[in-house]
Length: 195
Image 1 (cartoon, rainbow, N blue to C red):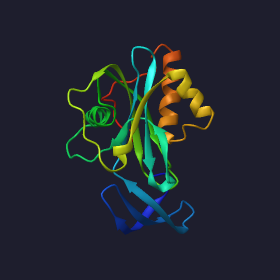
Image 2: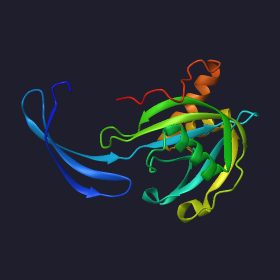
Image 3: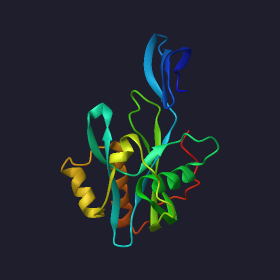
């Protein structure tokens, strides 16, 4: 591990989405320091692009910020045995009432590696059709608004500061770059997750 050795881990909090821990880490020079961070269960996001080159964004309340944000359809890896592509398909159906016949891997993103081990895998979904059964929404999702924006407009929203969710920013910019490269950078959905 490049000369960094964890000597001890202390768990301070355990919830359904993440744990808060402190590691005592021996640095390469021998000094021992404490490092606090979140251990996250993992997440996926979906850049859903329709045949008119419009991307699906959801406007959803985020309590830590006390306001809604424009985001990609996204969610956590919280069902045992469900693979990341299946989680992405489930979230697209639940949040946007859509299904997709074409899936590609767009980008992997460590959202805030200084304080969390969270990895979100962002997929590109195309050939969209309505999901067969609309999903009932509750809590923050009850007020969720789903809209489609031209991909270029969604990218402009990033630069205007209207889209600030890290996964949405990365996904939209990656989709625009991949489109400009005629989709050549896309990877198969079963590509191994970075170690």
